[in-house]
Image (cartoon, rainbow, N blue to C red; front, side):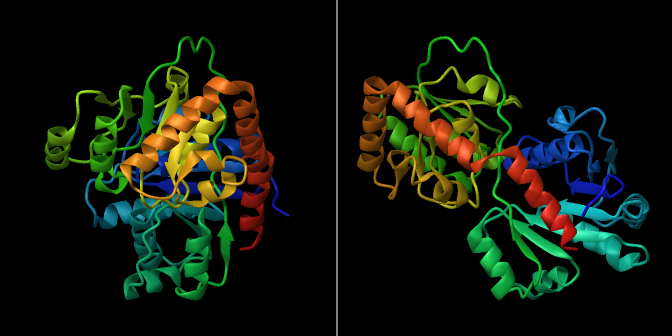
Length: 343
């Protein structure tokens, strides 16, 4: 069994606002609170979420300024060699860590890779990289099956996302619709704008543009009742202002934002994709749409609003049940320990 002397280092590119980054912050804080000696490394510099990491958790910042820098690769190795396990997040971060392992194989710790993408690429390079990890982790049953059967990884683990509920006071009046997600093609914003054109409600989107070119494309399509808001890192604190939420991405491994909506008891409509939907569909089937027909979404939104008016207490009770049954911090920590003990 893992002990308090077991040292774990989580590694990510940078703690910007995003789903994978929120997972890292929660994992690190939960493990620290349970007595694990855990630290965190960002390959770049300080991100918006860095301040949300427990102040007693040591953070390393590599400040890498080149993709291929032997000096940075060596500095990375000097840090990781002090740990028993490194828990790496995102594929581009994994590739950089693997370079360090190839250059400096001596005293390299056990390597856990947590996959945050639903894009399954069967490349020879990725297969080779996966021969150098000791465990594969994903929120998605599909990813875990792919890793075991196609990529031939023997030690694979399913670790569904959770969200730590934040107590928010003074929610006040609720109006309008909220969406959370950085502004990139995978999030299906053209569909969202078409849907917004058929709704009377205002829609506030909390997210960051990926680049200037995509921003130009999106702003040409954006209707007047849609507003994009950047710079908010504590998403749960703003959710209480809204009547309901939407999630329109066609492909997701485990949409963290849906758990955030649940944590604040905010009703939502989502497309039928990802592990979170699989977990909640029995309790909340009314929240899920199976197509991208505008009329289907408008009908689902109207039906949800009707439920919110006719039986708000019953709806909240169903949401609490779904959250408590699936997103227990205790169960999540036990799964993390199971992964580390498998190495």
